[in-house]
Length: 467
Figure 1 (tube, rainbow, N blue to C red):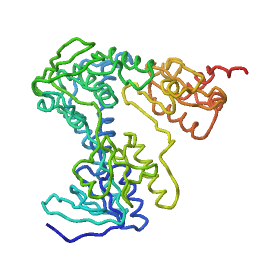
Figure 2: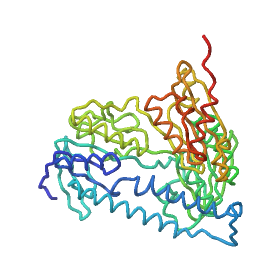
Figure 3: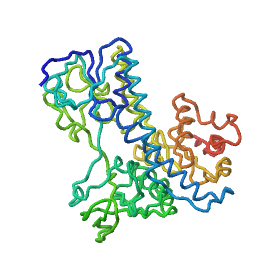
Figure 4: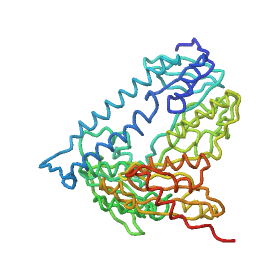
């Protein structure tokens, strides 16, 4: 064991979104900072999650465009999907992103140690290095950003079947003949559609009565219809009971649906049933750091843990599982270290499901507004009413906005349609600025663009009730 300790002003465990920006910022200010990273430089987003998945999803969209090319006057006699080439395109992007991260570490002066760390005392970590040696690291202040990982449900035979998570799905060198997707949430839906467009037969198994079950009913129905139209089988109200076989060869899933037993045979299984924090086995109890009942690090609104001078950041702290929220967590800790009082409560959380078309929303949807007893005025229009979609032959979906009943304040926006994330973002900026919906209704927007849909959407807002 290497018993020579190293002292730093800041020790950061994990190099994910919030962690890396905190490291680069503090180091650039002259602080002595070190980041300890187990495997993925830059965290999951550039390596195995957000960006790689969107890379592969775009390849699938190109395949779909080729498949539908005759509609656009382009005739193709034959095409096939080369999955090794899809994977290689993704790998090139990831490698480029890792190189950018390494350059940022060098430029900022932040240290980077590759290894697995665990607490052996308050603000004291032991790092197991790749060469088998260990190193003890002390920090005046410590930030924990260990992230989360995919849950493999405790389902008989599932682990033994060697199922895929999103990590393995993004490394496929072939198109699965028949893919079972366990879970109808964001990850499951995105990859289910992509694999279908590459040529797989796909079946989605969802235990709830609707896909994307936290969304409004009309949104769930629209997503369900999209999948059916693309030939994806969707089984809702389905509870998996056991698995036989080996994923990648032949598997059989047993389930009950609406109380009746059933089974499905396929070649591959993808598990997308949620995530759990990376907090086990890293000695948090030895550092005085408490966990929540679900295993996340207990933090307050300033992301401070129960141990002095120790913070948690990103998903391991129970923050909403989005890279953009982890980045905001960085801003919270950065500002508070500078003497400000920046809190996580009350912040906007934008959502985007990167199916094709996309689903995006920010603020309240109808389901949430009703649950909270918040009255609203509803405006809704089909994407086909936005003329730009007709030039693209992408008319599927709709826009809808919730408007306050007492004022003209925008309470929320939901978009299911082409470039929904960009459309939603424009409304979010207006919401942050406190602009009334009438400002978007009356603004002059370029024709023909997708944002021009705001004119029709916000012109359909019902008037305030007379008193």
